[in-house]
Length: 237
Image (cartoon, rainbow, N blue to C red):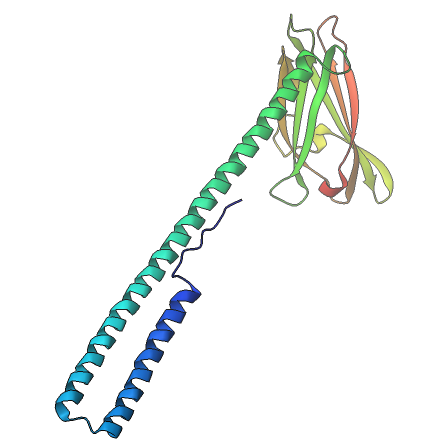
């Protein structure tokens, strides 16, 4: 939390000092006029007194200028402090983001080397959907991993399908029906530890997605295929 120091002679105290100086000046002038009338001062004394007041006014003007300069300096300091605070805050947010990324990376690699369930073979480590740049366009990110056994690469292909409804009728679309035109629908993989993929999906008009089916078909001996289903997140449909 940023602390703020309060400097004497600034803020409200500055205004009070100026007001008091003006009050003293006006009061002094009134006293002078009253005394001149009552005591019938001569012209020499009057001119001398007037000169004294002029000097006092000049001194007050100089002090006001100094006050204004001090206010400007403090204002500049405040702006600089705010900018410095913003820099610190931005750096802190960047650091927190990097820490989060590091923690996610550690969890990811731990899942490959030593999964909590102690399982072996290939699996879907992560599947994420984000909205694309156009209506009914989505970006799919899939991460496949080989757990525990890393003595050889695993090869195969991914079979993707999307279940849902069109006008209340159950409907299933294969990957080739959801890809942009002229995009190859084959989905091969070959990796030793992990591999990630990005696909653009375009939902047909009137289709409400419900379930994503992913089958990771292994073509490598002793490494079994795996099939997993994921609910389509309602906020992304």
